[in-house]
Image 1 (cartoon, rainbow, N blue to C red):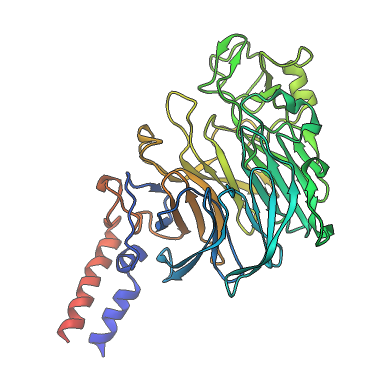
Image 2 (cartoon, one colour; image 1 turned 120 degrees about the horizontal axis):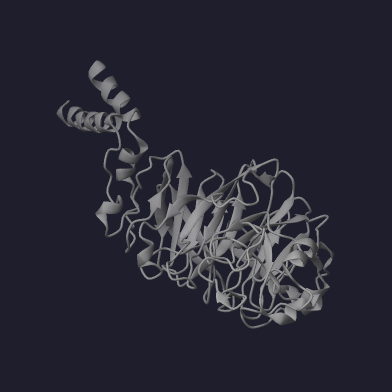
Length: 465
């Protein structure tokens, strides 16, 4: 009896990372293995997508993924616990090459909402049979423009029936967005519960303004406790200030607050006249400006200056590192943390971004001060940014499953990852071609080494008894 009991106790005490070696999922990345924060584990779950972007879980645990240029894909997952997951079935729910980013479900999960550059479309959905029902309906229309073509979708959980849609600018500096009636560089909300079955959709400019003067706020989320609407803003490229090139370290990306879905602020956040200070060193005519303040640019209207930028427009709650390209934001159930995907830069000499980071919240607001430069803490990163973008993952969409595991897409590599808090800090099963980056398990402490030895003893006892 003792012979049998001790091995099982040894097995129960093994670190999860040792047991993870038995996971049937052996997918590996083809670039230097990402680095994960202490206390977390991650795994590559799926690959072979064309350009995966937005994702969401349905009521039966199916994962819906927009594969840009392909359509909406459903993944049935085999869950062996922890990060040991794999795809057991892949189904194309909606074959539509115009779908490029946005996806959401109705509050009861019975309808799917997806976006093209011009429209928000809807189908009935049965998550048990994994089928869309009926023909598509147009919910929102007339959003076609050049430049930024993603249309992020958010269904309010505090105000059922309200759909928020984010629409970016037509190019880098879109002066036409000075007119609120342009409908560009805005987030608007739509009460789709009032739409009849025969409606041909709501014009985008007929929606209620949640915020405008937002160059390209791709990530939009609702705080689960307060109902506050938050967005992450992709700011301008190739910027000059008083004739000097400042584009490497300014302007900052932004985390913006917009009130609630029920009572949105509807305010102007400054684009294309005002932007956000990140680095103050060597900033022309800095005056009293500090990180997080707004400043005017050379081609702003004559009436706009640094003073009016900070007085007449809304400055961000937090500045984020320049050109890191935040594309999604998701809150934990208790609202204590927001996770942000940073797709990565192209418009600076040294690459930046290419990571997923966390931002601490308390009472519905970030805990960091407005002028903080370290509010976003690395969760999953590429270990060598000099290899980016060519040999890096580039995170886009984020989603939580029912077990509070965080999922993300990487569009450049056609991959989907899962992360779980509480795992060993060494990565579990998502190894690549760089062993120095932790691509194989190595005991991280004396305790882990002892447990590994006990595991070997257990195997020996089983086979010798």
